[in-house]
Length: 133
Image 1 (cartoon, rainbow, N blue to C red):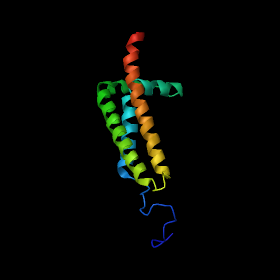
Image 2 (image 1 turned 60 degrees about the vertical axis):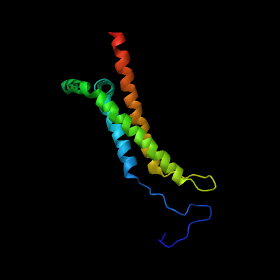
Image 3 (image 1 turned 120 degrees about the horizontal axis):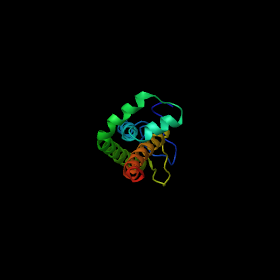
Image 4 (image 1 turned 45 degrees about the vertical axis):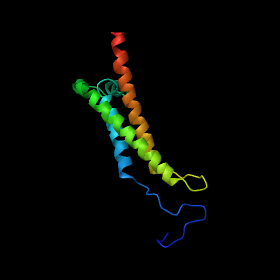
């Protein structure tokens, strides 16, 4: 499609960028924060479940004092990413009420939810684990 092509009837005139670096950064930050927050508790369990093991896994507990920082990183990234996704969704909506969401936005949302879920799971495990020993 060339640059002087007209928009189809019913389609918005402005073009929504397919990639938004702030949304990508937020999704990566949420995933990174979630994985790092769960590195002391959930990550070793997941690695042992799939057959990976060794003495090196004991080094993952060295990140335990930094868990609140990683949870904060994940929370800020998820909040920023969802705010950006909402703004992009609002801008993508046409005047007749139909909304088109690019596949990159869906991938970013999946990354945000997975990272946030990992961070929440790390919080729950940290609160519940002392009850069992």
